[in-house]
Structures are given as structure tokens and as C-alpha cells.
Length: 339
Image 1 (cartoon, rainbow, N blue to C red):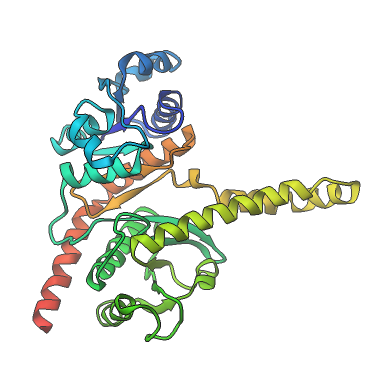
Image 2 (cartoon, rainbow, N blue to C red):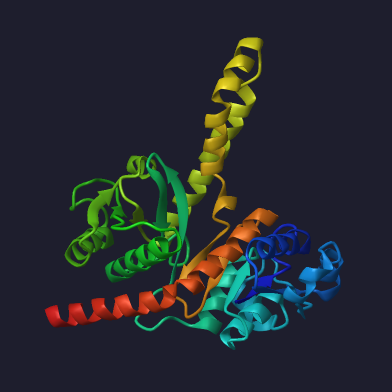
């Protein structure tokens, strides 16, 4: 498999991305990671990698870079030689099987929409993200691709999420919930109420509305919402998790008794930290585009980049996009027959 990696993406650029690509190749033999970006900067980092890996880490020169503050659509249109556009165009031309970036999420969304297009039968692509819960991880979708959505979009979000999570991370009979401000079917705005009715009608694994305090209890495996709400929730959750971890660090170890207690809770603390760590999943795909576009955190470490590349590999090996197209075709025919 050939994966294009935006080597300039993220807060630390090639220093992190090249190291992450090297880690990926150490664990997964026989693949190629194409490093897209400024040749000189990439080569400087590549020189730190054992020579036997260099043939699996070819460089494609892309001298331009898209900054986080730039207008995504304008940047994609104007910066044709940026690492983001070059990498996505390679994927669109079938020169690589996937694209991974820790760069501007907005630019990656815009570029993926423009260059990769949509899978057949997909109305709106969407981004999901994992959150920890008492019962494991919860997959929240959409978290930013669609500020506004219609009820039928949320049904597709749920279907795509179920296919992705079950094939890439495992799990059968995944349950779906709808984010709302009450458990009753009548709660929520007009779109949410209509989405509840549609989800109940079309998805046998739909378990009803999920309120804010239900999310971390793991009431359902997948939670659907519009991207505006999902993005706010995700950022709030990340902030709260950061505060919790900092408070634990701050208060443990202030005296001898607490130091002894810290030794006892250290394994639990380590497990909590791991469950909140975005590096464990590395990146999430933009589900619904006709390709594999993995979005990684701007603060990604080499481990996060390695795991993002592995998500791309798993999506390809499990043919996730094909399953999405086939399932949405079935849903479309079922809906037409019922009309």
C-alpha cells in the first residue's frame, strides 16, 4: 500500500511526520509512505532514519505550505504546489491509496471535497472522533464537517460510522444514539425531532436520544449530531479532560501521605491518561469522500502519525468505502420502495 503523508503538516512538521512514518514502517512491513513537502527539510529528517527504509520513504517535492490561519478554500485553489494539494491530487490520480495530514483541518476538508469528491449515494461527508466512556470508546459524528445538517444526513452519518468502527476497530451490533437535550423523542429542535423519527424507522440499532451526561456513560457506541454541535462538544470535552489531568498532577504528591496514595492510584491514572490520549487513534477519516483522507491532530507526535497511517491502512484493507457505498445503496432502495 502507498500512503501520501503531508510531511509539513502539524505543529512540528517533518521532525514529527518523518519519525512517525519510520515508526509505521517498522511495525508494518511492505508498505510505502510518500513524504510530500519541502525536499530539503524532509531530507534532513530522513537522514536520521536507517538507510534501508529510505526506498519506502520517497519524497515528492511540494514547496508551498498552507497555514492554519489561511482561508481553506482559497488556499486549496491558489496553492497548487502545497503539500496538502499535491498529496490529495496524488490520491485523486490513484498514485497513492490514501492521504494523511496533521495540517489545517479546514484545508483538508475543502481539498478532499474538491479533489476526491463523494462516494456514490453519500449526501454529505462527515468527520467523527472518539471519546472515552465508562464502557470503552464512543464515536461522535459529525464533529465539524457540516455546521448544518438535515435528518437524512444524520442517518447516513450513523451508517458510515457503524461501518468504519466495526471494520477498523472491531465490534458487532454497535448501537446508535442521537444527541439531544432530553431522552424523549419530542425533545430537541425541529431537525433533531425529525432525525429521531427517521433513525428509529431506518436503523434497528437506534437506541433513542442521548443527553450530555449520557455520553461518558457509554449509553451508545455511536452518537450522531450536526457538525456545529459536535465540534463544540468535542472541544469542550478535550478541555475538561486536560483540566482533570492537570488537577490530578497538581494535587498528588503534595505531602508524604499523598505520595503513598499516588503509588496506589498510579496504574489507574495511567489508564485514564491513555483513554484520553488522541495519539492512541492517531487520526480520523473524513467519511464519505471517494478516497481515504485521514485528519490528524495538529499537535500529533510520531506515535500519533504512526497510528494515523495505520488507520489509513486498515480502511483500505477492509474496503470501508465499498461497504459504505453498498450499504447506502441498500438504504436508498429501501427508502424508495417504502415511498
